[in-house]
Image (tube, rainbow, N blue to C red; front, side, top):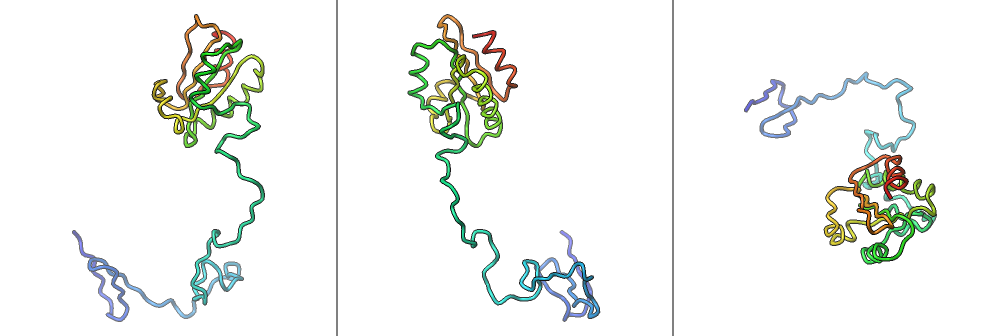
Length: 188
Protein backbone atom coordinates (compact mmCIF):
# COMPACT_ATOMS: atom_id res chain seq x y z
CA UNK A 1 0.00 0.00 0.00
CA UNK A 2 1.48 3.31 -1.04
CA UNK A 3 1.12 6.58 0.78
CA UNK A 4 0.85 9.77 -1.25
CA UNK A 5 2.40 12.70 0.52
CA UNK A 6 2.57 16.25 -0.80
CA UNK A 7 4.67 18.86 1.01
CA UNK A 8 2.76 22.15 1.01
CA UNK A 9 1.87 24.75 3.58
CA UNK A 10 -0.85 23.45 5.95
CA UNK A 11 -3.46 26.09 5.06
CA UNK A 12 -3.73 24.81 1.44
CA UNK A 13 -4.25 21.09 2.16
CA UNK A 14 -7.67 19.53 1.91
CA UNK A 15 -7.73 15.99 3.24
CA UNK A 16 -10.14 13.59 1.58
CA UNK A 17 -9.08 10.41 3.31
CA UNK A 18 -6.34 9.33 5.68
CA UNK A 19 -4.33 7.98 2.75
CA UNK A 20 -4.73 10.60 0.02
CA UNK A 21 -4.44 14.35 0.25
CA UNK A 22 -4.59 16.93 -2.51
CA UNK A 23 -3.17 20.39 -2.89
CA UNK A 24 -5.90 22.92 -3.41
CA UNK A 25 -4.86 26.41 -4.30
CA UNK A 26 -7.15 29.29 -5.15
CA UNK A 27 -7.49 30.10 -8.84
CA UNK A 28 -5.29 32.86 -10.16
CA UNK A 29 -6.85 36.31 -9.88
CA UNK A 30 -6.36 37.13 -13.55
CA UNK A 31 -8.10 33.96 -14.78
CA UNK A 32 -11.07 34.56 -17.11
CA UNK A 33 -12.92 32.61 -19.76
CA UNK A 34 -12.94 33.72 -23.39
CA UNK A 35 -16.14 35.50 -24.37
CA UNK A 36 -17.30 32.53 -26.51
CA UNK A 37 -17.20 30.19 -23.49
CA UNK A 38 -18.97 32.45 -21.02
CA UNK A 39 -22.47 31.39 -20.07
CA UNK A 40 -25.35 33.79 -20.62
CA UNK A 41 -27.37 32.10 -17.88
CA UNK A 42 -26.49 33.00 -14.36
CA UNK A 43 -28.44 30.04 -12.95
CA UNK A 44 -26.92 27.47 -15.29
CA UNK A 45 -26.53 23.79 -14.50
CA UNK A 46 -22.75 24.19 -14.64
CA UNK A 47 -22.59 27.51 -12.83
CA UNK A 48 -20.04 27.89 -10.05
CA UNK A 49 -22.00 30.59 -8.28
CA UNK A 50 -24.27 29.42 -5.49
CA UNK A 51 -27.97 29.47 -6.23
CA UNK A 52 -30.75 30.49 -3.92
CA UNK A 53 -32.85 27.39 -4.69
CA UNK A 54 -31.82 24.03 -3.28
CA UNK A 55 -33.88 21.96 -5.76
CA UNK A 56 -31.72 20.33 -8.42
CA UNK A 57 -32.67 20.61 -12.07
CA UNK A 58 -34.51 17.50 -13.23
CA UNK A 59 -36.84 16.67 -16.09
CA UNK A 60 -39.09 14.88 -13.63
CA UNK A 61 -39.76 18.14 -11.77
CA UNK A 62 -41.17 19.77 -14.90
CA UNK A 63 -44.93 19.41 -15.41
CA UNK A 64 -45.88 16.83 -18.02
CA UNK A 65 -48.96 16.69 -20.20
CA UNK A 66 -50.36 13.38 -21.46
CA UNK A 67 -50.68 13.72 -25.23
CA UNK A 68 -52.27 10.34 -25.95
CA UNK A 69 -53.40 7.17 -24.24
CA UNK A 70 -50.44 4.80 -23.67
CA UNK A 71 -50.62 1.36 -25.33
CA UNK A 72 -51.95 -1.62 -23.39
CA UNK A 73 -48.78 -3.68 -23.66
CA UNK A 74 -45.23 -3.19 -24.79
CA UNK A 75 -44.77 -4.05 -28.48
CA UNK A 76 -48.37 -5.30 -28.71
CA UNK A 77 -51.05 -3.13 -30.27
CA UNK A 78 -54.56 -3.79 -31.48
CA UNK A 79 -53.71 -2.97 -35.11
CA UNK A 80 -50.78 -5.41 -35.33
CA UNK A 81 -51.44 -8.41 -37.54
CA UNK A 82 -49.54 -10.79 -35.27
CA UNK A 83 -51.73 -11.21 -32.19
CA UNK A 84 -50.59 -12.10 -28.68
CA UNK A 85 -52.41 -15.20 -27.42
CA UNK A 86 -52.60 -17.12 -24.17
CA UNK A 87 -51.47 -20.73 -23.82
CA UNK A 88 -55.08 -21.95 -23.87
CA UNK A 89 -55.83 -20.07 -27.11
CA UNK A 90 -52.72 -21.48 -28.79
CA UNK A 91 -53.61 -25.04 -27.75
CA UNK A 92 -57.09 -24.60 -29.24
CA UNK A 93 -55.55 -23.36 -32.50
CA UNK A 94 -53.16 -26.31 -32.69
CA UNK A 95 -55.93 -28.87 -32.00
CA UNK A 96 -58.49 -27.18 -34.26
CA UNK A 97 -59.01 -27.44 -38.00
CA UNK A 98 -56.75 -25.20 -40.09
CA UNK A 99 -56.06 -24.85 -43.79
CA UNK A 100 -52.94 -22.73 -43.32
CA UNK A 101 -49.70 -23.22 -41.36
CA UNK A 102 -49.57 -21.89 -37.82
CA UNK A 103 -46.47 -19.97 -36.77
CA UNK A 104 -46.01 -19.45 -33.02
CA UNK A 105 -43.49 -16.85 -31.87
CA UNK A 106 -42.27 -17.32 -28.28
CA UNK A 107 -40.88 -13.96 -27.19
CA UNK A 108 -40.18 -11.68 -24.22
CA UNK A 109 -40.57 -7.91 -24.04
CA UNK A 110 -37.02 -7.48 -22.69
CA UNK A 111 -35.45 -9.51 -25.54
CA UNK A 112 -33.80 -7.37 -28.24
CA UNK A 113 -33.75 -10.06 -30.97
CA UNK A 114 -37.42 -10.77 -30.21
CA UNK A 115 -38.29 -7.18 -31.07
CA UNK A 116 -36.43 -7.47 -34.38
CA UNK A 117 -38.14 -10.80 -35.08
CA UNK A 118 -41.54 -9.22 -34.34
CA UNK A 119 -40.90 -6.64 -37.07
CA UNK A 120 -40.03 -9.39 -39.55
CA UNK A 121 -43.11 -11.39 -38.56
CA UNK A 122 -45.32 -8.34 -39.12
CA UNK A 123 -43.89 -8.01 -42.64
CA UNK A 124 -44.46 -11.72 -43.17
CA UNK A 125 -48.07 -11.39 -42.00
CA UNK A 126 -48.58 -8.68 -44.62
CA UNK A 127 -47.09 -10.90 -47.34
CA UNK A 128 -49.08 -14.01 -46.33
CA UNK A 129 -52.44 -12.67 -45.11
CA UNK A 130 -54.39 -15.78 -46.17
CA UNK A 131 -51.57 -18.33 -46.39
CA UNK A 132 -50.30 -18.38 -42.79
CA UNK A 133 -51.56 -17.70 -39.28
CA UNK A 134 -48.91 -16.01 -37.13
CA UNK A 135 -49.37 -15.62 -33.37
CA UNK A 136 -47.09 -14.73 -30.45
CA UNK A 137 -46.80 -15.95 -26.87
CA UNK A 138 -45.10 -13.92 -24.13
CA UNK A 139 -42.89 -16.37 -22.23
CA UNK A 140 -42.97 -14.21 -19.09
CA UNK A 141 -46.79 -14.35 -18.97
CA UNK A 142 -47.03 -18.01 -20.05
CA UNK A 143 -44.01 -19.46 -18.27
CA UNK A 144 -45.42 -22.98 -17.76
CA UNK A 145 -46.50 -23.25 -21.40
CA UNK A 146 -43.06 -22.13 -22.62
CA UNK A 147 -41.43 -24.67 -20.29
CA UNK A 148 -43.74 -27.44 -21.54
CA UNK A 149 -42.88 -26.50 -25.13
CA UNK A 150 -39.18 -26.69 -24.15
CA UNK A 151 -38.39 -23.10 -25.11
CA UNK A 152 -34.76 -22.62 -24.14
CA UNK A 153 -33.74 -19.61 -26.25
CA UNK A 154 -35.54 -16.53 -27.44
CA UNK A 155 -37.01 -15.92 -29.90
CA UNK A 156 -38.28 -19.43 -30.68
CA UNK A 157 -40.54 -20.06 -33.67
CA UNK A 158 -42.71 -23.13 -34.17
CA UNK A 159 -43.99 -23.78 -37.68
CA UNK A 160 -46.94 -26.19 -37.46
CA UNK A 161 -48.31 -27.55 -40.72
CA UNK A 162 -52.07 -27.96 -41.28
CA UNK A 163 -51.24 -31.54 -42.33
CA UNK A 164 -51.11 -33.63 -39.12
CA UNK A 165 -48.69 -36.08 -40.78
CA UNK A 166 -45.95 -33.44 -41.08
CA UNK A 167 -43.65 -32.67 -38.17
CA UNK A 168 -43.44 -29.18 -36.74
CA UNK A 169 -40.33 -27.13 -37.52
CA UNK A 170 -38.64 -25.31 -34.67
CA UNK A 171 -36.11 -22.46 -34.89
CA UNK A 172 -34.31 -20.63 -32.10
CA UNK A 173 -32.76 -17.22 -32.37
CA UNK A 174 -33.12 -14.48 -34.92
CA UNK A 175 -33.55 -15.92 -38.42
CA UNK A 176 -33.78 -14.06 -41.73
CA UNK A 177 -37.20 -13.41 -43.24
CA UNK A 178 -36.23 -15.34 -46.38
CA UNK A 179 -35.72 -18.49 -44.29
CA UNK A 180 -39.22 -18.06 -42.88
CA UNK A 181 -40.60 -17.64 -46.42
CA UNK A 182 -38.82 -20.83 -47.53
CA UNK A 183 -40.23 -22.82 -44.60
CA UNK A 184 -43.77 -21.61 -45.30
CA UNK A 185 -43.55 -22.12 -49.07
CA UNK A 186 -41.60 -25.39 -49.22
CA UNK A 187 -41.94 -27.24 -45.91
CA UNK A 188 -45.57 -26.65 -44.94
